[in-house]
Image (cartoon, rainbow, N blue to C red; front, side):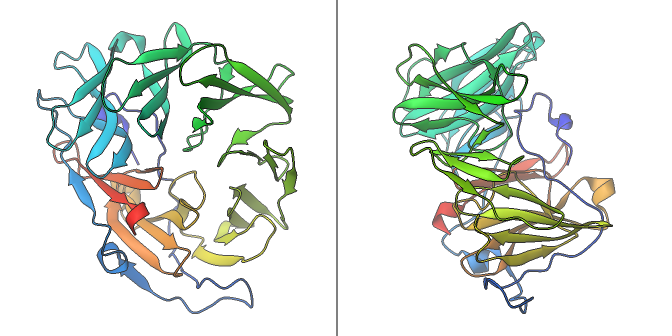
Length: 357
């Protein structure tokens, strides 16, 4: 999956590919060996109330828009260079309305828009560039100028998930590397109204997941920050496990590499095989909306084209749904899934609202 061809791109997730193999979907049962695959469905057949919408990336003044976050199938936040190419704009686009510029920064600053979150009318994002650290900004979806909330972000750590920034209890939360040689993590937060940054230090290496939980993949545990309770993750064998509080993605390894992909609850229950060794996770987040595991399946021309089939395993039905035959990148936040197709001259973006599936 190549992204540099689009110029200034928002930092986002890239579909992970592996050569060869075939995806094998399994039913939703929790044990008793492999079940008969229920077969593949098109997105239209599986989710008739969730149409795929195609978005023209061209801005009214010419440059191409690269989405960083879809709020719905017709509303997105992303970047576009100015016509001169000297600056980069962070833009809110909604349907046929004129694009609204949220920020404009010089291209020479190498700007990066690294994480986004939306809560009600509030849009927040992390922004960095040459010469200044990560800063947290906020804007209102309904209008008004963007505001700098804080530049006191510590050594912010973003893992390319929808939980890199979390808005909860009127505050924006993020994780930062601690000051004890990597042995601690700082959970930082600032009020949406601005003000001083609060810092809570947690021993260990943690990342944010669904609020109020943290995940520690090195120790295979979850921590509820509201109660202080830890939950151990059931693991066995040569597996790579990534968890949310509800589901874990288990990459089952063999001597030849990836053998298959399973899903299970953190306590090990309801485990089921969802894919063979030829598939890969298409996004870092596990089980979007606690229901959809997003997968990529390379084909014979993947090494040449950089594209792969984009598939979604529906936990509720056990079906594997074909979303796109050849997608170049897959991204997901807040129940929205989007991807691109085409090349430099014919690029188009497509969005699917899984909340309506």
